[in-house]
Length: 397
Image: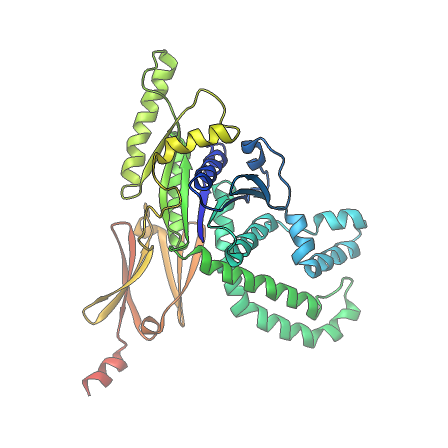
């Protein structure tokens, strides 16, 4: 199955582009499902249809789905939901309000991740198009699987054992219920699902990300930040889509000023995203609503091309042999060396850029070596690993 994620700053037309791509994929004969992960869903508005919490067929070989976090909590994580309701109830909230607030922040995104996994596991479709939330929320969404792996490996086993021992002693003194083994089992299922999802999302053979933007300063800057952080976490960006470009034959003074602004940022986009296909979409003479206009937008974006194709096939992370050393290269475009913080603990390398930190589990060949410096070259972070002194001595013997 092919998975394509669309992200971008709010208001750039990301949902329309995602829906248009889905329409074109279905027209090409692919069994296609388009799914929204944005809590403020507008996917149904693009099709001019009412969508629910389950997949709905909206055309020949085309399905659409707006994920509901409340629905997903009740269907898949009932024990976690029941425990949260119980906790809030003991704090004085009435039952109805406790049920409402028992969905923790971010569950929309987590529920969406689960559906990506469900669709890929079922194999009922050829293409999954994901209309992601605006950039900031999307980055939080895509870091969930890494966080889940860390909790599953480091915190969960210790926490569950400790709670089994402490629960009989602590519960009589507590004014709220402590999590039971059933709650921990449900939590483990969630963490395992997220860890499995991580493998799907970071597999460039399956999943790529496309950034939608308009030619405005703040939008372009956010798109560049998104590209940096997506690369940091191992996601491959295979296209940039510049939406709502003004036609060239405008004579009004106001629009001519905007044309000059657009031209300036068009050059910046072309320079910043060199090596990634850039698709330009005109500002249409009517709203992009309904299947007919979505098909028109898709033709403007992809021409006669296949929108499900992988336009970039390179990986954002690789390991190279350099003489007796190994070099781990990680793509981090637009980042200066001073903005990167590196640390290492046992077999894990921690890379921090801005507000995001990624934990990289080192393969055995690197984990047995010492790090010997790092550099930023051509938009890549390159970390050198050398033999430990004692290993070098053993080799000489």
